[in-house]
Length: 244
Image (cartoon, rainbow, N blue to C red; front, side, top):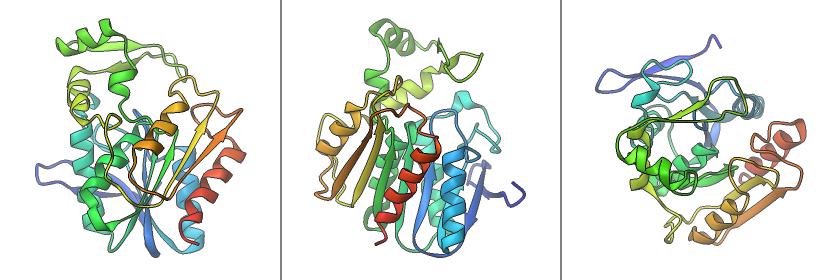
């Protein structure tokens, strides 16, 4: 991706991003845990936006992809700060946040910061509050004590780490136990064969969001990644439905 640029944060972090200018609202794609902007869904959204003359921003959180740093230092608070800074630096006007898995949790936190600039939300297997429901009590005790834990990774040979710093910060960002004060149109997509994030999570999120304009699309044979051709076509339809 030769058109990758870097945004300098006040503390020296350089956040890698790609941006195509165009009509608003601009689409901002938020990757999942240990994912980056080179993923198939992010690239499909970017390519479609570019072809349609729609503004679109992709980025890599610090410690991920083309952005330097240690993944162990990453937290929702830190990554929210990076997303909000980038949006402020490169986008004018309203924004549609599209979040995949953990990115579907982060989009809520970023949306709260954007205020009136938030024009829409699109969640793909959104995983808000997974720090609470995604770990056994023993694992949470170890994380609370400052340990790093490792879980089986269905997508590669190396286990997936959860660092204590990430988990402890994430527990301060739980949202599903109360109303989420966001009123923008929202589209949620979830596969019913998702082994990582229960599809009922999207129904809980729809219930807790204050918006009255919410649609949930359940894909009966869809897995967590939702990266098949038909899944990506559904994602693009859901995003572009917000512009009709």
